[in-house]
Image (cartoon, rainbow, N blue to C red):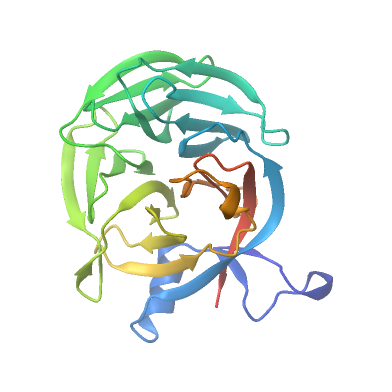
Amino acid sequence: MTTACGGVNGQPDSDQAVAMSGEALEAGVSANGVALAMHVEVVTEYPHDPTSFTQGLELVDGRLFESTGHYGTSTVREVDLATGGVLSSTQLADTVFGEGLTAIGDGRLLQLTWKAEAATVWNLYDLEPIDTWSYEGEGWGVCLLNPETLVMSDGSATLTFRSTEDFHELGSIAVVQEELPQELLNELECVNGTVWANVWKTDTIVGIDPTTGNILAWVDASSLPVERSSLAPGSVLNGIAHDPETGRFLLTGKYWPTLYEVEFVAG
């Protein structure tokens, strides 16, 4: 478990900020059987391209990659975190709508598409395509659970497990809270055995146990200081990247002008 100090003079608050492992979240839930309530605390704000319809974020050895969507403007790109500038970018075919993004090792990125039923494997060093993997249904979010297993969302309450070799299906699990399905699971980020998911059209991020489908934590991100009244319709919170060096998360949204470095704080 990675702990970040948030109190006066560097001393931790009673609401200590954590990037929790699955085991730590399980311990928090098992105490009372209720998913842990969390909120975000902003550490740093960075510029973000306000024309970017963000579908996925991924940090790889300090380098930030982003997937953007919409027909005719979908890209995979490397972004300068400090300035928000695009360092390199490859545009997808006009008939393809880009979706979730994750690193899969060996210098590769995997990018989903919404309805094309195809995922592209990219060389992260030059953003040139390496391979294409097929699947059935819609693609929304994806993250690397372990070296052999990817987790994929499709906007429903189901997470599908897929092979990192060729994306064939390994199984699936329903995500539930008190036996009720949690629909609209979108962008995903796997961290220490927990799957974090944006819930589409909300300011909520959920932490999921991929072995049971139980929701371990609810993260309220409504305090992010974005000027929502100035945003276009549909400019919802979307995009999660975890920084293993700090234990913090990077969050942004579709067409948001700002990317936020945050801590998930209990309470």
